Image 1: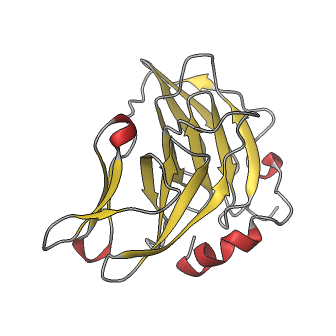
Image 2: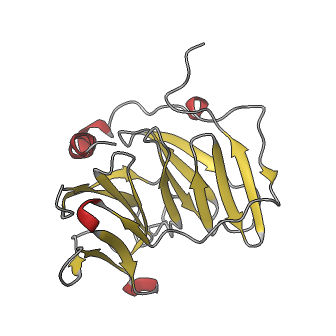
Length: 208
């Protein structure tokens, strides 16, 4: 997801949603992988110019922080961003995605060449059940093609590279998801001591 697309996505999000058929393979169920191990959700990522972006604090006191290569950490506060809980950097390193556990959006920040963040926008809306205001989003990730995935405790929300919703992918089991990753060919979730994977279509979809 480029920085330009991030700025434009507030308008594009109203366009026609894409189908999960562009992501899922019908004949590929979730399967257990005992040979895989997964770390917990990403709480910090490295950006350009030696900067680091981090989620600091716990629970409702979590906050987003920019740590320049030199100088003191800078707290990033945005009106509407309630409880940042996870973050991921786009493949082109131009956009920082931040999940809001206390709200219902994935926020996007433009990452400038000097590492500073600006142009915050809540482009991707998580489809919560009626009356639910807090997503409790656990993890957020990009694949190599720029698709965005947000893992909630009981499901995974998928978006295309310009933050249009593709749909909601059911969790492998009733156990809560506590970590999520994707390499563009597999969705990988950790549920307690179990790691479950599901094969997906790579993006962009290869020509037949």
